[in-house]
Length: 87
Image 1 (cartoon, rainbow, N blue to C red):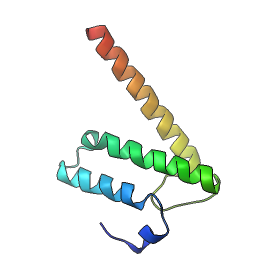
Image 2 (cartoon, rainbow, N blue to C red):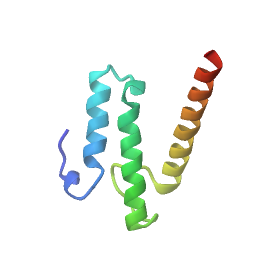
Image 3 (cartoon, rainbow, N blue to C red):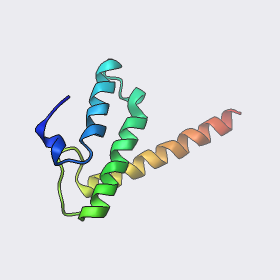
Image 4 (spheres, rainbow, N blue to C red):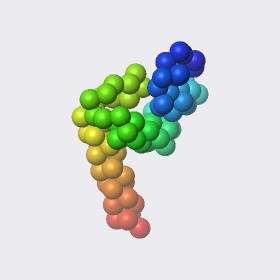
């Protein structure tokens, strides 16, 4: 995936990696979770450095990013709890 936005968007490589992964895995997003986490962390860093009012093509808006990060964090906690109960 190539685009001229890659020059100005610091998270462009992470976004492209997700697209490649999803295509290689028949659009099964769960197989690309680590790459999605990487994009969200990149976006978080972008907003920390540039301000929450800035926008970038590859990142969700700041408020949505916060929600996504919280959901993913809760998902990990829930998955770990389920594994502990099984054991």
